[in-house]
Length: 372
Image (tube, rainbow, N blue to C red; front, side):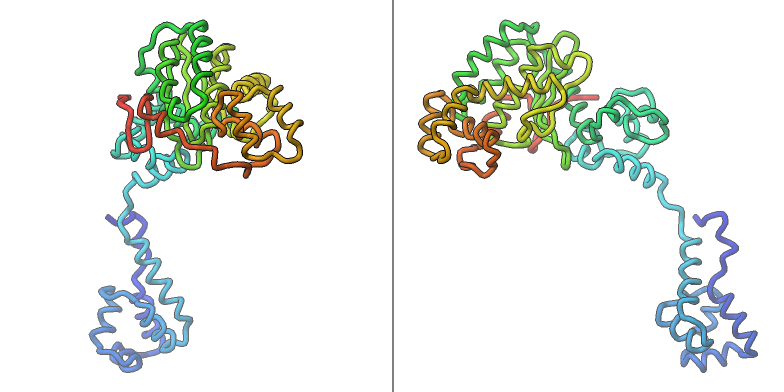
């Protein structure tokens, strides 16, 4: 279907006919000049044949006119008479401009469908009553709370996926006493990577909903703490698949839970791997608790002071044994203290393979069974 304003844009043949008439030529004359059959010229003049780049150059020489004139005439004609594109293109582009919709479809968070249904699914996904209320989308003069907190759209999508999964989980009533007891049991799991598989069960028994969701591309996020009524939720992305990062992030989020953080506003943690201080007092408290859990600060300080300036691998391994920790956990803390991110990296073993099978997880090829 052509656009309604296309009729005024004429085929290049109309203007070529005017040039022929202005020069007193006939179609046969132009055919002779161009060295083509007269029928070819007739088809161009009657709009039945397009102007190719080669023909544009030939006409330019024939009329002593810039060849781009004929090429542009053909381009304008073709564009004006082209069918209108699918209106869904603009809608999908707007969605993708804000959210990684294609990736969300691939991950099974929403279904592939027409633009109207995609918009409806985003409304349900973000728990809003209208398209204009979807965070970050256009047509709203006032920013949402998430935008004011500089949470990126991809991070927000990850957060809401974590929320939907957590809503589907049933756990016992949360008990601070049970969570502190679980922390004591965690202390006995720090010496071997495979023992992290016990974490999900211990958290669930304490009434904490534990969810693991693979991060979206270009969405840096470590973890989150929030509450669904009286049940705390800890979400982790495992974006840094290392034993030291796993235990640090987990203990960081547990401290948020123990102190009741995240009840009014989600505590979203990004880049805990390299951060040591924050302007947020709650984050500083959680960071300190996580660092102390991974390796008691006074003992790490004494070890570094005693071994300065040479921190040999054999000494770190022996020190880790005295703490009943895997060397990777201790190395992680020493790296932060010394700001040496290349230090003994071979001890930073992966743990995701042990965490995901025993967790309620989404990503890495599996989709949590959640309906919107």
